[in-house]
Length: 86
Image 1 (cartoon, rainbow, N blue to C red):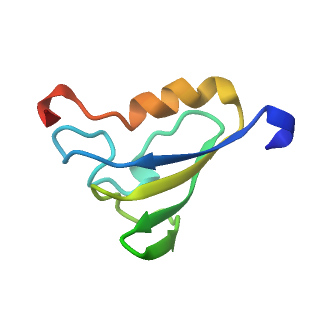
Image 2 (cartoon, rainbow, N blue to C red):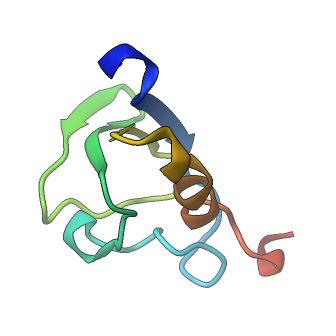
């Protein structure tokens, strides 16, 4: 996207509210890196368009767009589960 400067990413959400920075949070409450935005969620067999009050659940597939590829490591870190998940 954007001649290689941007990316579309899919993150599969794991963990629970203790081990994840995003599980149980509404999209508007997630502090995404600059230039990153959530486009939609895939939950079971439903595609849910991102809206500020949608709550992220474990096993959701989050489709997001990152305007600057250099922000990808920050996005990946946000969606990682903590050690308590193991």
